[in-house]
Image 1 (cartoon, protein in one colour):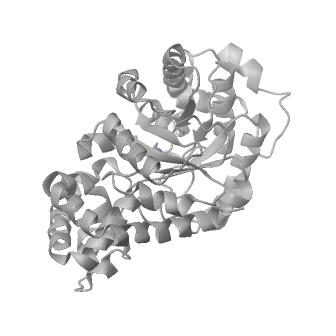
Image 2 (image 1 turned 180 degrees about the horizontal axis):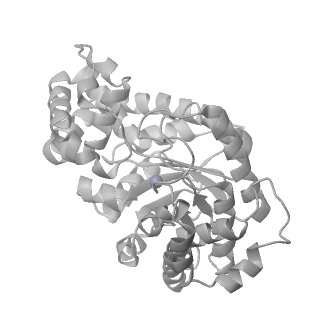
Image 3 (image 1 turned 60 degrees about the vertical axis):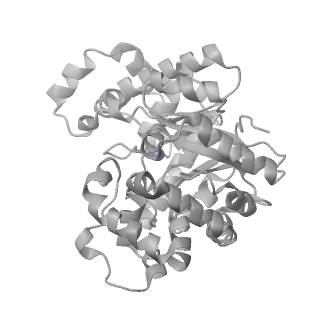
Length: 388
Ligand code: ZN
């Protein structure tokens, strides 16, 4: 049944075409994770032309057909304003992810002390310094001094404000729901000490959040493995886990979780039960893999459109592929294993669905066994590495 998942370890599957849930269910059965079978951001819906209601209906149909009778959730992802909420609430979503990233002051990390001081003047410095300055005891995630506390306040104050506002709005309309605060798409990483500050302030303001998505160090690009120093990330994830354990009231959430195979063993080790992982576009890439093998003409049309649209479509995503580095190959399925091609195809999904959506869906229905099989294998690989 559709319900909040609270603190159970959980895994989110986005499905941009509305046909992938049977494959997701097959992969998830028997794992330790509670599923989010409907998960779509406002940004994705704008690009796919689907409504929150349609996304949920597509998942529901597959859940019923597969006789999945355990709890599952529906995630209204990356909500940026209160106005984004109503259509998801009306449709019956159970999990709400607020993304106040646009209100994070990325300059706070490098502002001069004078500039910082001016910004702090507008905040409750007296109250917060009494809470966070000396006497707090050194923890593994570090300790504030006056300057670092000011930087954290300035960086996150407005974001916290929006998270509080949206939580209150939801609480006025719903009794039980999962609430996630995500700052994963900000320019600067969230240090473990800043994570502590965020969690502490949200808690103090009465926000009952079930998960929190910091922006981790290194690069979590779409549809490809982690780019960065894994041993530094290992140490950092351990500290984030320590902060989470200190509060004990929420899970850590990994966004852009698709294909981060080198990271899964680390999060499984450090985060344990307090884990949520989100994936989305990788299911779309599995759909394209089916086309590459079975409907090469359609695949080539989508690939060509992707190359035309990449520079424009990539703007709101973190990707680093370059068109000039695309491989020259006639082996189409191998493109789905290539870093450059994966990113190009990944971020141009909206253009592809807009132009070829009908043909794409028809092709997947025709080859549905291959599609479900591909999805199952792909996600079994994800979930296998995330077992504890
Ligand atoms: Zn995200």
